[in-house]
Image (cartoon, rainbow, N blue to C red; front, side):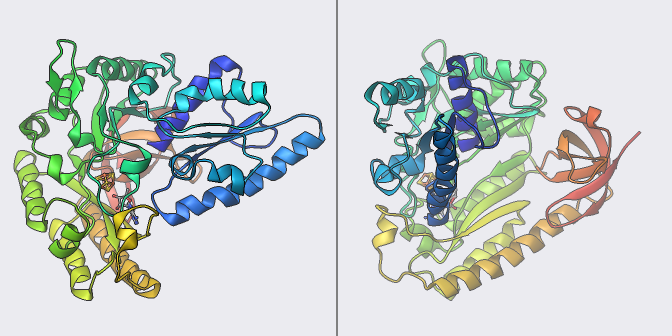
Length: 432
Ligand code: 5AD
Ligand code: SF4
């Protein structure tokens, strides 16, 4: 979502004389688009700001200037505190108000002081988004939904991104068509809670995610469609199972975070589902689409997590056989219910559990990848590889495939025989 928002901020500032650069040296403006989900991500902002400050001071000595803006969820959570800790910052803007960046730039000039906007205006944000957005390349994001009403007890998202909001169907259609016209072959529909999508269509009726997908796959030029991230509790849309069974362009892959395998911890987290409910869902998706692959997020060391609870998490990783997993140590976030709980798990226990979980995850990922050796799979190439003469792409199951190939192949799909599998990637040769 932050990658998507950053592209949009760039688009928004283009008519105001700015162009995108990938380094702060000599820049007229630097925007730090920040993440507040875990403490580590949050703290990085201040060390990064320290570095940028030096460049600002260098420019000021030469008689020019640099506007520094802090955007995103750290901006939303810390607000004016940022000016206190880093008085050289000019603008603080939350994730639901960055459409006002041009006005904030005017304000700092007019007042010769700092400016801040932390309001939540979802509708206005999408309505004022520039139409002529730039290309995102072969694989593009389209935001369809923002915010979250789930209030998991560890999570800051409902506070920083605000209440659940779905974009209008016509806006999503228009943006998707534009992305395809600019070379996108794959679209990923984005939302903090994308499975809760309920946008208004042209005739005033409400569309679910399944219905939206059913229409989007008809778009010419679109080869692959994905969506991210889903909450198990919202996977009640029968249409979604149907489109997975019938629509070839909808990739057989689902990111479905469970966070923990222990029912006790799931309840304490306020996840509103059990382990059994989750496993039933997985089975239902596999019934609709037998080759469906899954990924998940996990938190270890949630307050009160015992060794037994943790072993339930290990066992669910084994039981599902994930294609991909992300795992994190629980990080207490200010203002969330879990941060005030007793029985916080000591740091060394969290470290040790994370290591154990990650080794099981890697084993499972490797197993999943090994199943594909010898198979022929369609791979959509989207970038150059790390080594000279290599290009990289993705299988339908989101595995990275590296082959020897020409850069001209980027943006195309080719059938590839998989020759070897590793924990995080595959290698192969194109079928001629
Ligand atoms: N501590 C650790 N991980 C967290 N996540 C969200 N909040 C926290 C937290 N306080 C993880 C969850 C979520 C992913 C995006 O980040 O696993 O699914
Ligand atoms: Fe956070 Fe996801 Fe829970 Fe919403 S559903 S509160 S975004 S972890």
